[in-house]
Image (cartoon, rainbow, N blue to C red; front, side, top):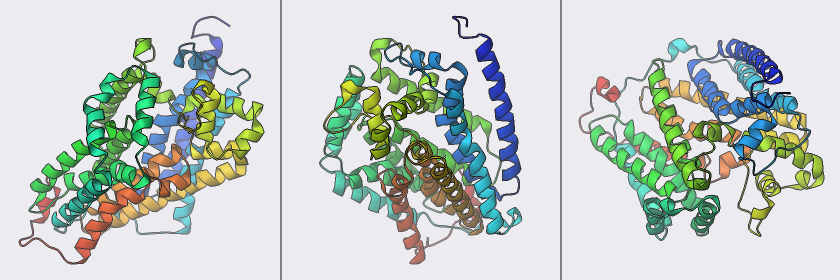
Length: 447
């Protein structure tokens, strides 16, 4: 085997991967073709995020194998021996097969109206329910986070730029989290960004007031999340806005918008990585770090399962135990370092293939149910209703491939917190709040 990156074995694995990708694409297209637009968009969003955050990196690992691992860690952490990269690629490809099939099977069992009925809503709506929700969310943020706000602002404006590397950044993050409860984090992670999204897409007579307030709340959400020394919530906020923009109307998605969003995310991630590892002079570019951030733990998870199977089977937090297995020098009494793995991967290593399949099927059913909700929202006549669904659905489609399914429901980054401003706005609508002079239907779609 040659010493360079591009030898015969790598070329053959790359060709094998291309063949697999063609088969997966054909399978997904066949299963999605018969679904309604809302379901197609929900499934495509879930799988698209999964491909970017996990499968692409797993495919890269399969092609270059140990060389990728050693390059990622710049030689500080050697690649595990005897890793079955082919098996790990098959495991990573499982959602690309099962999720579209599960959505199609659910659609066959629960037939619905066709896409012909799914026209964009044209009924006028008011911004006042969303403005009311904003008042409730801002009041809740101040009520629960009043003592933390000054320190979070100081962290965002000063502290994060004074980081001296990974250890320093983790220490500052741990200090910030010491006083952060589930409700406090949920309001910052989910409620505040979701409220900003609703305001930004609001219509009616007060839409400019709503959008101005939406910009301010979005800036506040970004700054406060930076103060927690995390990149994940910022990415989730961006994804929520992108998904809301996609589902707000039935028109085709503009590729230029997606490319601009991807470029902005990459620049943000590159800045964050430069703060984490200033000492290596940018040895790993942002694309490498972004694609391998989650799947890089797969070879070590296999090693963990081989060397300490009982510890893995008894683990109540595989991500933390894997992080301590990879970096024993960072082990503490309070577990903090973690190497996040998707729920279906953890289930495979702890409970086997059948349980793993059940988890992936559940993700497909969640995407199907969310897509049906989008279809119903478009038929409701309220042009803001799809945005409401998207605000709650976005974490439900993104986080199952980042963490455990139960956490998606009940944790501080789950669906409950984005649902808070949506529930308040819907309640105000139900109580009959209307603008004095409703805006014309066309104004509801103005940007």
